[in-house]
Length: 358
Image 1 (cartoon, rainbow, N blue to C red):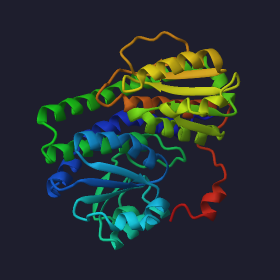
Image 2 (cartoon, one colour):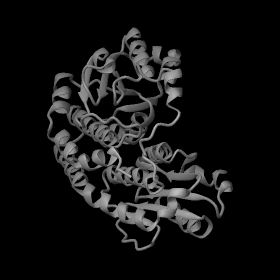
Image 3 (cartoon, rainbow, N blue to C red):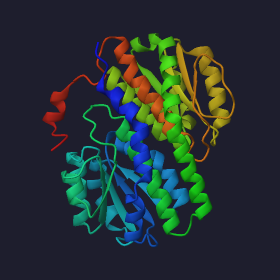
Image 4 (cartoon, rainbow, N blue to C red):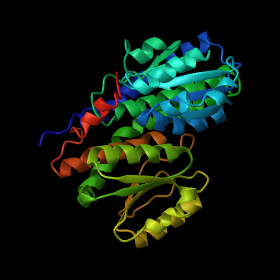
């Protein structure tokens, strides 16, 4: 079987992210629009674009002192009582759509502007309805990605949001220059880590090809990487076309654990953020009680277990970029073991029926 086009996008990521980091677009945007009074960002997005806002939330709140709320388009347009009470001058709506054609996001932009909010739009391409209807614009700089399951666009948009949080924090003078540079250095280092992460994950897949026939799976994450866990669920579910569930670590033992058995297939994310001891104990338990376990580990401890994929320890960003890449590789590789294109059509008629895109 011919290799999926998704591999091209996965391997492009390092170069595209270097170009994004070198670009002045984020710094220029912040300089042109003084962020001193910015207190609140409302993200509006769907799918992977929504998932990366769950990761980015921590960076905006911690580094830029900006309160963050993420909305699906329907939730946003139906939330009038809350929106009408928000101060327009200190609130920014950030609408994200990789293709720039999401009908729900376009409706949300119209709604935001009718209510008097300023809107920043983010897409992979210019000259799309989402780009044209915002007040301000930033580009993913990842190039076009004509795939059902997005990879390089996810990494680029996540990195773009991290850069935006850093520049807003510096622009508001709540993030010192040395701290800003330390974060930037870690992001650059994370981009350099990507080829090794791809290689390690491919080796794991080669030794665990039986994962390609699983009928369902669970993903458990927490902290910064809870959003990555949600994205991992979506990505692998999209390509294997099987049901999946995601759970936040703290909630796992509050009922979710009752579904676990010898036929369960579980993926977890281990970092050194709050909850790391609980995650370690959970992983030890799962190793003894489930059929298949994968732990994506981003701690300083060197792991040798067969069920572990270890990525470099990047504490400031909780290694979120490379943990995300691990799941992208798995999502692309597993269907191909079965002879399936991970980008194959599946229920495409539904998206036409409900008019997902314009």
